[in-house]
Every structure is written in structure tokens, then in C-alpha cells.
Amino acid sequence: MVVSSNISSSLFWDIDISKLDWNRHKQLIVERVIQRGSLNAIKEVTDHYGIQELKSIIRQIPYLEKRDIAFVNIYFDIPLNELKCYTRKRLARNFLD
Image (cartoon, rainbow, N blue to C red):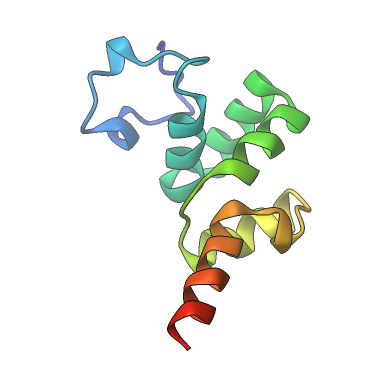
């Protein structure tokens, strides 16, 4: 993966960034950018994948913090019940109740 100036290589501190592939590792890339990236980094992945593909990737991310869930819900206009990370949290909460 060629890291642009908008995406910090520090987001992938635990990975050999030269082996990171935009297509094979798209969920990992998007997840890291959502969790720790800047708005410029988010724009970069949006430009790379396109808004519809990016929304599809975000819907499949298995875990995000509450603040990241709220962000993608508002910024990308994705209903909460379409986010895998949100429905998993609700299922876990209901199971424990």
C-alpha cells in the first residue's frame, strides 16, 4: 500500500505496511481510518473506494467504539440497525440482561 500524506502510517503500526493491499485489506484499512484517522484520511478512503463501497465496508466492521458508531451513523448517514458492530453490541447486551 502506498500511504498518502492524508493517511498516517502510524495507523498501521502493527503491520508491515508494504504488504498492505487496498483491495484485500479494505476492511482493516477502513476500520483503522474510522477509529484513529483524520477527516482528511476519511476523505482519502472515500475517494479511493467510493461512497457506496465505503458504506458497505463500514456496515460489516464487527467492532467500533460508541463514538465511532455515532460518527459513522451521522457522517455517512448509515442507520444504526445496519451496522454489524451496533447490532452485535445490542445482542450482547440483551443476552447479559
